[in-house]
Image (cartoon, rainbow, N blue to C red; front, side, top):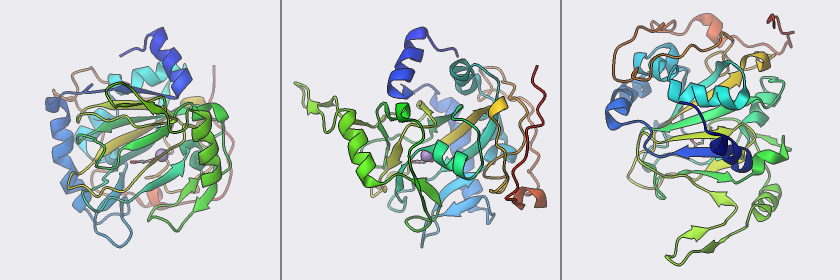
Length: 303
Ligand code: SIN
Ligand code: MN
């Protein structure tokens, strides 16, 4: 799937693009069905919510689960990002976020690139997030919130929050969030039908199978899920190959170390069987848990 010049312009302006219902229920079915068994595993790659058994985030399923390995090579997700970054991509991070009914906790305001820079030494912001909803996302189950156009501000000052949730994150302070929202439209207003318009915070909602592309500097957050509806979503973090990380401070199942460009499968890869590699199918290798504070030079040979 390729982006039109108009979509590219909209992305540049807003910092995200939303594609409601891009994948059919038939296509998302095998993914959704695989999640409970993945979440049941007692493995380092399942991070549970604070004081709860509910999975907050599962890492690297594309390395050990066949349907997710196929999703990770889907042209509807990979090609638009190749268009936007103008380069081949590798998988920096792959998550299945639970945000489970009643249990799913907040994600504080942050930029993903803040974490990738501070922890992984990713040289520039030339990386992108792609989200796929595996459940319907509505105003009740903690949808993502974006500050429209905030990616234009580049890398913002951030604080390493190790306390609020079970997962460490480089978060942006409330004062700065207030300013960014004000600059993008504040509270906004309402149209003749009572629908909110023009505000600085936007929140794409839609059926399972919807996709969002968003810039690595776009400031985002989500509230807790007090509803009885799960909000499982998959996030691919795709990085331009030449922009690969320069430090392995975080384990490999969180920040990947294989910078091989992704080759797409055909567009029907979620409906038909295509063989895929599952290198961690029989368990995480010891190397995937190792970490280092050492900074390394790029060994990529660029033409
Ligand atoms: C994230 O920002 O990485 C996750 C946010 C969410 O799942 O709501
Ligand atoms: Mn994020």
